[in-house]
Length: 159
Image (cartoon, rainbow, N blue to C red; front, top):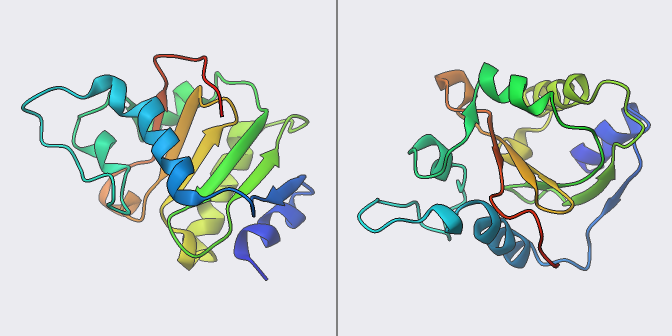
């Protein structure tokens, strides 16, 4: 069983695998929404083909909240539909958290779940369905790298 599917079932969350969406295209859209608006000449940027795209946050290339500040900023957002994208062979999902009473607690539980049971999904991105915000869990959280939370400069886009 896909490890993320197990998490959704435990929490009775509606989630569907994104089988007709190419991960490379989705992550290019992610890059365009969250990284491209901040690109400046002279800054060393992580390679877009790199599996660790969250490095745009850890290197300071893109403004974001990190660690506890990320949790604080994230708690201000109302739950809704989101895309969950692991940096691995795990499936991507469209998840509807609209009815979730405590969204931050759910995401905290997801982070704990990935750290203990989701060894194939350690670097995982959560993306608002409209690309207004993104959350990145990293495999290096124990080294104080992440999690990261960022919002897009331009909140209107088409998929």
